[in-house]
Image (tube, rainbow over all chains, first blue to last red):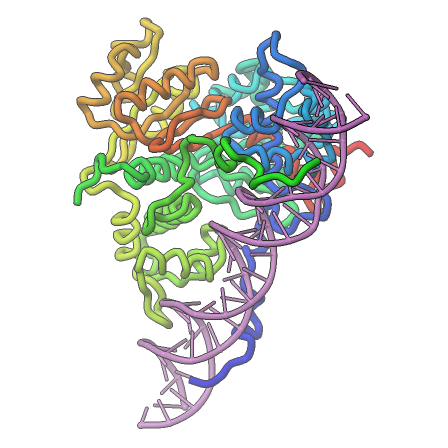
Length: 241
Length: 241
DNA sequence: CTTTCTTTGTGAAATGAATCACAATGTGAA
DNA sequence: TTCACATTGTGATTCATTTCACAAAGAAAG
């Protein structure tokens, strides 16, 4: 074989394809894991019992969130929040600081596509939800479902998606349709202005840059858990040699 | 302040606490991300249309799975699967090879706790499922639900959890109870022999080493998506300066 | 006031994962 | 047969994230 040029000459260098994700983050924008941890911290702090002290140490928050003290301190550092030695972090201020990072000042609306079993469960899950981030519209093709209001959320026919999403300035889409329709529905939402997608369909979405997709692949998670249930240190169970 | 010993003398060095996860993997055991990708590869290959060619190139599988060709090759390398230059990977053999890695030879059973909206949706989701990994029992405290069969799955009272889990050799637990009961239910399952947990409750589980927990935190995922919907390159939308 | 203790904030180091880049391999065409 | 080419397999490298480890900062006790 002969020595070759940098491998590909006409093909672009191997990238995650022109596909969505937080791949190339703008400077000052946090990483996905980072945002997820902040979200968890906030909820844990909000769920605190009434009598609890108004401050918390990094190692206590770490214990609550299954993290480490160093991780917590680093996370808070990057959002510019500071505590005091020997007293820890002020909980009320911390909740507020995380909110400034995570929440849209004017609030954000989400739309859900596919009012099946899972869709209805999620609507229910998010009914009691702060105004900061709410599912404000649902869509389905089934005329038996459209026009009704399920868990306080109106169900529109899919044909009205573009109009409703635009009118309400919806920026987040939750996809709970069957795998076969997921890509089509996602593209409709994208065209209507939705930028962030939470995809429960068991197939990856292919969207251009400028869209962010989080795959919630229940089947894959289940298989992952099953794998580690067998392969964890000290797990001889269920395994046939 | 005075120079100090290695920081902590009696406290153990900061670790993710004696808490579950794939933290310290045994040698030869794959990483979580790795397993997740293999699971996705397999499903994509299985879902292939009938007329498709019996082989596939790494870059084609990468495109399907939102990955890169190099990543795919590396993944298959670590499970010891090889293709042929200029012809790619044999799909049928690859599906089988992934199965040898992911599946328990004798199959694995899962139990679901909490037959609410979300629990029922998941039971439905997993009804048509291969024998390799199935939800074989559900549990709930509500006597209106126990004794019935929902989506082909029998619902037992929580009191029978230990007996049923032991009798059926169940190794995976799916938690869809309210946050307040999640920890208790997880501990019951752990005591009965469950090693892997898929936790949909909006609070992290605290289990000792020897248990693996995958958090399926829908609220956090939603907040993450919302954040990136606003902060993605070229996303001025929904943001108020 | 001084000492002792625990905690924060953060460079530096370590770990882990993804990507690069290229020799080796096989295919099909001439 | 030989050539040209696209692809695999993989060491080396880069990049991202986590962890370490310690100076600085209070607080509380003496």
